[in-house]
Image 1 (cartoon, helix red, strand yellow):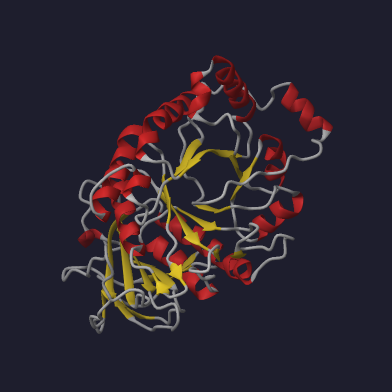
Image 2 (cartoon, rainbow, N blue to C red; image 1 turned 135 degrees about the horizontal axis):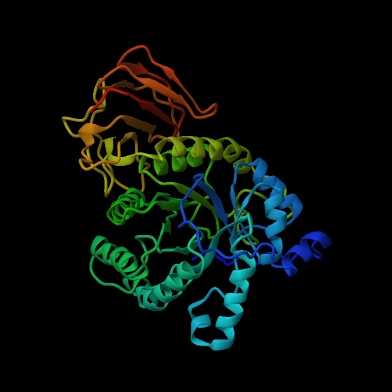
Length: 427
């Protein structure tokens, strides 16, 4: 479970902006409002500091683009070019059951829905399936009142108990029912879940299983997904991830086709590691993610108009993993030898996510893009990738493509690192 965050209210709002709010200049009618879209791929966090000028500046400089705040923080967030995820006690199914609370909810929505910083409404973290009915009513109501902004709900991971999920069956059955029920009832615009696997004794074994199940459900529903990953320890049994491990989390998340990533935690009392200390001092993870966040957005933006056609493991095959098919248009030469996998050892080998056009034939053989990832976050790799035609290589730092010269490409990969390539040959 994650801890809720309470943002401190600003002591005052500049007079001119306060006057604009009082005159409802942010709250013009939304008759022609568009429905919510991801836009810039999401980089956010859980359990952060109270919003302040210093915190907002630090987040913007570090490549975070969605921050948690209250209504009175919206102008501050906007000044720093950030998007806001709004927290308010009124964003609860209970508000629809009481006329007075509903009126307050409606008034709040009228005040904020046209604010240029607003991106999403935070609803709840890790609900049981028993809560899906009331949540569905709230999400539908918010979509009716303000279709341009996301109603954000985060789900349990695969290692939640059946009692927590509110479903039954083995791990896969219970979790698939949980996802299916959530999508059928709530009809979300985004799937979000958390999964933390870096234990002191090694890596727990369901990380890729969870990615695979969420990816599959998101594709069936034709919606994007967001992955909350570990950036701290909160108990003696878990460890603080290192920068190379954060790179592994970023690139494996991308290879499975996510359009958002979030880090638990940014900073919170009682948690070691994170992105900043309680006094605001950046940790080593902040400095690592300052680069990785921008790489995530850069790569995810390139993949956004495409469809994830397959995700393949070479080397170790953890639960949920699929091996590379013989007719894959992208291959490794020489092939990676199979390796036995026994958790809690770390997964080693290569990961290949393939992407192609969104059309009526979503077959892996039609892939035009491939993201290759070094699954070993303790050692570099230098694989040779073969494509179906001359390749181009994407520089995630500059956001530019360059020709590789032919269909054969050898490049070094940092521990946990990845590389995006493409071919423009018609499939």
